Image 1 (cartoon, rainbow, N blue to C red):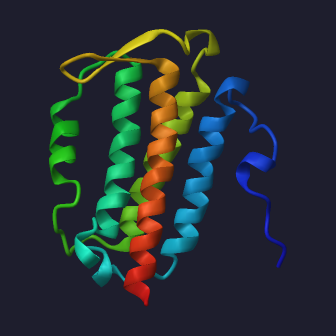
Image 2 (image 1 turned 135 degrees about the vertical axis):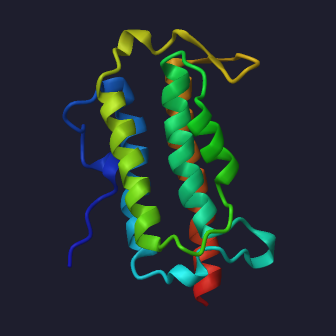
Length: 167
């Protein structure tokens, strides 16, 4: 079996602005690796927190939530009640959730995020966007980049946690 090059080495992804290719590449790379990592991961380990680390379920939920929240800020909207409720429940123990369900929701959020990114006008990347109630300063590009790097960061943490749990 020949291993494919990392997503960023496969060239531009059709349908996305060239300036946003790194965002798309990073998110798609995390998605691919997430599926490889979580394939056959037992659902009964989703809520384990070895050495006090965040659980695998938290990382899957949190990544999905951050992608959704960053899109909201790019749109210059406030978070909805549903988004605040979701945020409060990230990492909250729920033994009814399965690995497959969490991955399915994660994929849905990735798809929604990438559909949004495809519609971004690259000329708007430097436009100001306020974050949160305090309207902390960012830009369209900054928010999209944060969504990608945050996804990568939490994937890295998930990778370590899953490896510890599987040994």
